[in-house]
Amino acid sequence: MAYKRSRQAKHMDLAKEVAAMATPLDLEAGSGSTSLAIVESLRAKDLGAFDMQLLSLRKNLDVQLSKFLIISDPEDLQIVSQHVSEASLKYPEFPFHIVDATSLVPELVFLSKHSESEDAPYYNDHKFGYITRMIVKLAAFEFVGGKSEFYLALDADVLCVRPTSYEDLVYEGKAVVNKGTISFDKMYQWKGAVDVLDGPFELLQDNVAYGGVPSLYNTRGVYKLKTYLEIEYQQPWRYSLLRYLFGWTDYSLYYSFLRMSGMFERYHTAKPQGVFRTTDLSEGTIGTKGWERWDFSETLDPKAQGAFVHLHGMLEVETEKVNEKLRRYFE
Image 1 (tube, rainbow, N blue to C red):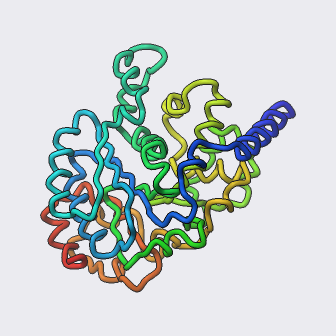
Image 2 (cartoon, rainbow, N blue to C red):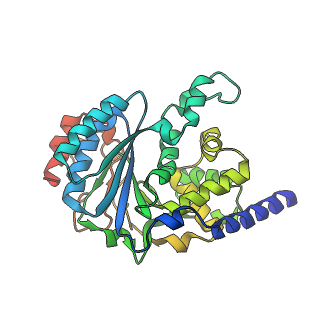
């Protein structure tokens, strides 16, 4: 136990040393930038929900976008590219840029070639699944850094539900982040993040959760997380995360590292429902049996707090049914 505390103390010191380091992005990202990038991992089966998301963004998001980065599974790349190309004609205000997931996580190529080896025993779980989509959200900093200090990481089943400006998301140079209590069923995400970071248990003692879907990330903050993981594990940071298949999320890892390194208040300000809504909104809203009879006017009320709503389960419902129920809120 004494050894573990000593090791964790050394990693706390390492995190603070990394926080003090300069980054290449410090030279590129101009101070005072009021542009934002959007990052989204997108699969072919998500395209119906994606169309509804674009309607909501066009109506409610009043932000200068430096890039709308779409990351696709290699197997879906052609379908997704065609769909996004058609969407760009309808939504010229969105600066779409499409990349293959292996461009951001090249280790996936290695895993696909050696999927039976001891080095990658769980390749089927890596294949642009849950973990990979979280890793690409973090790895995207290399594609958006230099033009925007912050980027918004979306899933396809996220809707923008109220008029939202840059100042609503980035206040006095700091990105807003949701703050709440860690629920019992989500504790594993935060414990797992601390385990990956080999950080002190004290990070969990206040029982506070930061972020969720969607979240805002600072490009320099993610760069420093990358640097810390590569020093800690002595191998590419993406590969290290691919070896940890369960027990963390992109936001629990990022915000836990910022707290551990003392950088949280440098880049973020925490507010209940600062980015997305949580009040009177239960997970699985759309996917719950009988959802067709529900009235979503309160959930999607443009006057309520929180710019975004994460409608879990929307991806599993037929596109026509989603359109019938939700389209009227965004036209």
